Image (cartoon, rainbow, N blue to C red; front, side, top):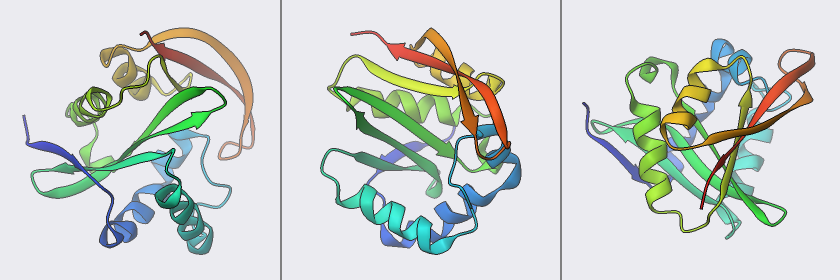
Length: 158
């Protein structure tokens, strides 16, 4: 298994994170992403908000010294939700599962919620292995697919 670490997101990470978030295969799979993944100004504004909001906890995922993606938690009403994104070249190696699990060890809030497109089997598997359990589904408009799709809602118990 590679060496997987989490650290604060640095300014120098943003170009790579932007590239990860523009990968058309990953964008389609995630389904619920920025309206225009190629809009750098909106990306920069989004990350400025993330990095200055004290309620949001964001971390860079580093694999063998190389930036591989991000993981974050954020408030949704009274709940805490997590999200993560991994560069496609890092998929299928257990990295996302390890990174999400490491992140959850540092997150005191419980329960924690997560969501994924119901056909995003890889992401659902990551969340399940990290201890999340399905609590329902809902239909939502997925801007990257141009249609409403089913989204699975998950919860990490207390």
